Length: 161
Image 1 (cartoon, one colour):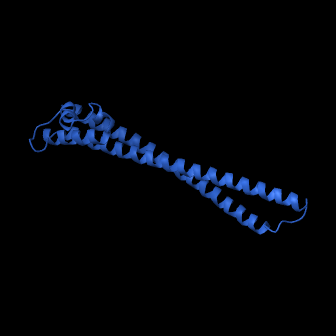
Image 2: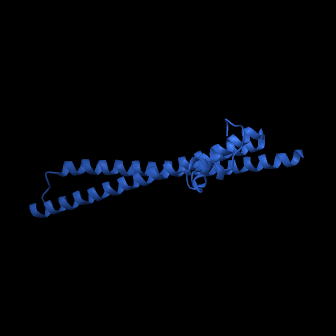
Image 3: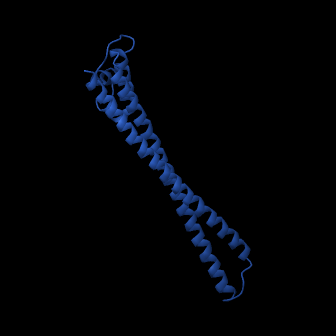
């Protein structure tokens, strides 16, 4: 499009690149890039602003997906650690039963250290969940603000006419 200075339709782009006709709909970043080129060629500032907003929204969606993946990974790690701690506790209880009901285990200091590590891991998990919630709130506010900006951009051309 840039070389020939001629705007191409989505169908023409997908035909020339020899991909599925739905490719640009699935790859929003590429569709936004094509719209940016079309807006530049048409020298339409409102269209360029809408394209910039769409590009920001796409970036926010990607960032949100990454944050959700990180959250899921942290939750999996937390569950794995909790399972390991349950196993260690069961082993410790079994050892105490073998050694006698009230006999102190020689591994008490190890268990205290493991408990401290578990508590630290749980606190870290809680902090991560709090941070994720804060990021979700920021993301929601940004999406609302983007919606307002889009609405304002579309309302201004109507007022000027």
